[in-house]
Image 1 (cartoon, rainbow over the protein chains, first blue to last red):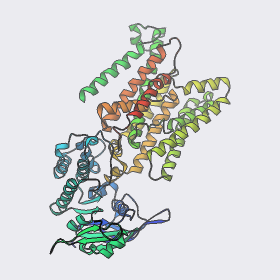
Image 2 (cartoon, rainbow over the protein chains, first blue to last red; image 1 turned 30 degrees about the vertical axis):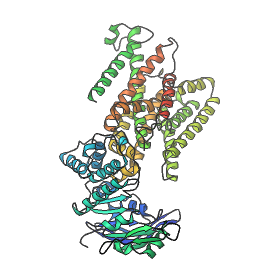
Image 3 (cartoon, rainbow over the protein chains, first blue to last red; image 1 turned 90 degrees about the vertical axis):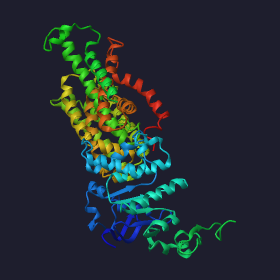
Image 4 (tube, rainbow over the protein chains, first blue to last red; image 1 turned 180 degrees about the vertical axis):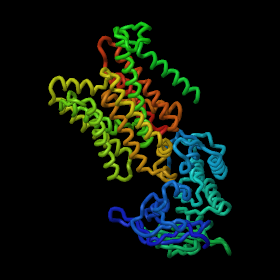
Length: 267
Length: 328
């Protein structure tokens, strides 16, 4: 690994006596694509929030580009790391363009007009995410896929080099899932952005990421190459459900399929 | 958009300039040019009507500012300094000073806004405490906490009022209903600085308010220090609202209606919305007060009667079509 973006050691988050995260450790290099998987309530979203400085960890070390995360000013941090949270957002009478422009917040004073740099960043973010044609639409009128792309555009306008995404493909149909996955690959491969994506889509994970971090009950259940996750015993331990691996021919990673009725697939 | 704002400004200038000329007594034009004259027309115009119109304008503007900021911060059109107990706290402070007969002591008039500010800080402290105990800062919890606070404060106010002598008791009741009958030039010395400082504090956070309306998590991700912003909005708004309440009493609904109507017309960019709401809220209160003091002349209605008469149905209309701008 060349330059390290995130270096996490012994990270813990305790809330009201419960360990939301316990002894998390990983290292992520520049331009890497890391996926975080795990069952609901495993602490995936909490980890993303910690990495964006939204939650202060109760133990351990988080270094961003070699510097303690807690030493960053919120605006300065926002210029490096962008977070695409899960779920809906309000303000439905803002236009798509106005929303993307809000991504320039960390660079602007309260009454400062957008400069050429800001306008360029906004245009670029809308072009990459293919929402330019929607720029005058109101947020309240967007479909699920359009909303997700707009949300990502807003995060890209922040001009950071690290992007954190929380389940960016949930609630989308297949075509829009593929669109988002392609967009993430483009950001990672062509624009050399560092990505950390929380997802439940194991097959997509194995296809695009460089490394996987599997969480269970706030602890690391697996960390390493995505292919290493393709093990029925390991998956069963993480998700408490049996899995089948469907071979797809030589040299192609098998498909992961959760089994039903405890024993096998329903016929 | 420019045209709409221009029309609003024109409309508001006409109302604010016209309002002092309307009243029980028709005043001759010549009074306008004699600000220090001793004839009745000059005194009525310059010592009564003009300061009253200005107090109404500044008061309405302040209430609209507070309402607009709270609506964005809580992402709910029903969240205003009134529904969240800030005005109730201020009212309690004023009622306390009145009940204790402190109005007549030297510096008494200055005690009122100070007590109002302390009262509103008490309300803010409780709402803030509830929010900290429930870290999800859920709007419905806070609104309910605010409603509970308002009832609690009003019970204390009514207690103070029932134990007061007849004169103070009448004063408290009349003032609670919201009215501008007492508004003189001195009142502006309290209100203008408070509204200017409040507008400055809130005005520095216009981008934060845009983002908070989209969502607190997105706002924090973009670099907004959400806690700091909320504290600043709470403090700035408390200052404005307590100054207005200490002069005008509890005039409901202006803070809810003005920013919401303006949102429908100019959108939710707070850089535009807040100034426009202030102008609209000020003009609206001037118009309501003009109606209040003329419609049953020589009897004067408390202006709160007019705003609440319009505001009640408006509130219901909001509840019915609430999903809309604030949808999330």
